[in-house]
Structure formats: C-alpha cells, structure tokens
Image (cartoon, chains in turn purple, cyan):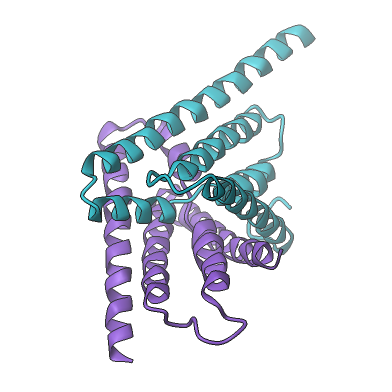
Length: 132
Length: 138
C-alpha cells in the first residue's frame, strides 16, 4: 500500500511535468513531437541514473528510504509517468505527420537516443558513486 | 478547463497520471509474481493497452463526442502514464547487454507495430460508430 502510494505520487508528478512540456512544445512548434522526444530522452537518462545508483546500493542506507521505496517512486512513478509510449505512437498515427522520413527519424531518434540515455545515466551513476 | 495549463486541468492530469502509473505497477507486479521470464512481457502489455485506450479517447475527442480536455486528462494523463518509454529503453539496454540483439529488435518492433495497429484500430472504430450514429439521427 505504501509503495503503491509512492508510485501514484511519482506518477502524478512525472505526468504533470510531461504534460506541461508537451503543451509548451505544441505552442512553440505547433506539434507535441519535440516535447515527447525530449521527455522520453530525459526520462530515460533519469531512469538510468537511478537504476545505476540503486545498483551500487547508494541512497539505500537507513529507513525509511530503502531501495524498494526509491525504486517505486522514481522508476515506476516519476520516470515511468514522465515518459510515454502511447503519445509517441499517437503522434506517429496522426495524418498530418504522414511524412515517411519524418516518422522514421522520429522513431529512430526516440529509441536510439533513449537507449543511449539509459547508458549515459548508468555511467553517470558509476562516476558519481566512485567519487563518493 | 479550456486552457490545458490551467491549474484545475493540471490537477486532473496529475490524478490521471497517478492512476495510470498505479495500474502499470500493478500489471508489472502480476507478471513479476508469475516468475521472471527474461523477456519484459508486462511492458508490451501496458504499452499496447495504453495505445488502445488512447486511440479510443482520441477518436471520441476527434468526433467532438468528448471535450478536448478528455484528451489531456485521459489521453496524456491516464494513457500517457500507463505507458512508459524509459522502462522500455532500459529493458532494451538490458537485453542488449546480454547480447540478445534479436530479442531487442523483436521487443521494440512488436510494440511499435502492435501499438500503431491498436491505436489506429480504436480510432477508426470510434469514427465508424460516430458516422453510423449521425446517419441514424439525420
């Protein structure tokens, strides 16, 4: 129950942040695509960082900040809610984006850069963990 | 509630996000209890479910059956948080590091193709239903 609350709280936080960013992108560029691309990459970086830090047992000492709670709040909640797959797919399905190259590069950039971001996040965690 | 960045709308979007994230965690829990299979099936399930749901919501908003704020609350909020990109990227990286390159490709392509298919299917289903309804009325 306690963990579910942390997931819900993190999910609410991540979702609102994503919503604001994609709405701003919509206003600035007339499309939510740049916003969704950005949140998915930044969220993957954050997830990689938290995964790396938890792996090293960092932040996990002492009650009540145990690893399970941090993982529920950050991994499932904040970054899970911040990033989105459904909006990504929905943008691809929109008729006004029926430009094959744009769609292809959007898919490649989203997946490629978010996977890279996970790597970078885990590497950052190792650097941070080593320095402390 | 006509401004997406109004405080009231943001609160509703946050509530939707809390709901979506909780359902995603619950589905993940169900799959975790049935044993770790290596292949992250639960991510495929939540992502496809979210795409289907978003397709219905977007379809109803497009037909003007629902107000655009439902797209923000249910679409961006619930469906947006039910699905996740970061966990998908992390799962792909994990498979990649285990040198399961085919599994990475299958995992990603499965979600892309199925996600697009169910999203567009839901939208066209709603659009067909709406047109039939309009014809019956006129």
